[in-house]
Length: 110
Image 1 (cartoon, one colour):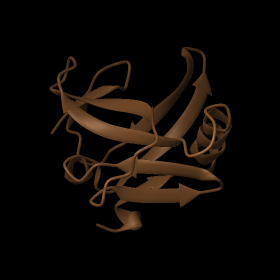
Image 2: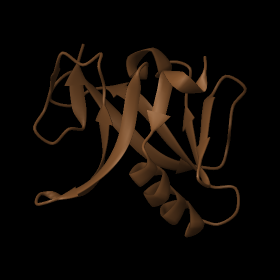
Image 3: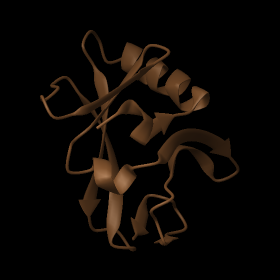
Image 4: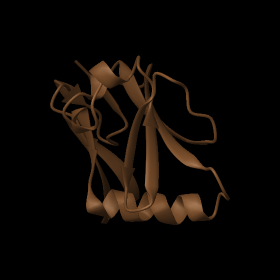
């Protein structure tokens, strides 16, 4: 697993850094893929303080993001972005593996 398999945009890194500052020392953002959602799989974002040996670790501009080894294949080639538009502010995963996604952008199918 290499860092290049999942990337974090500048906007997302800044926003993650802001969130993690408020969470205290050692906080990291964990992104994982789970079964469920309206399209078959869904993205989950959680603050975590525990890194496992097989986690993909992405560090950018003070933000540390963890992706568990089971989720990496689903996210390979993806970019995590932060968007602030008319429907609200949120993290969005631009995933080239997704063949369909829901309107809210949190679930997808492959």
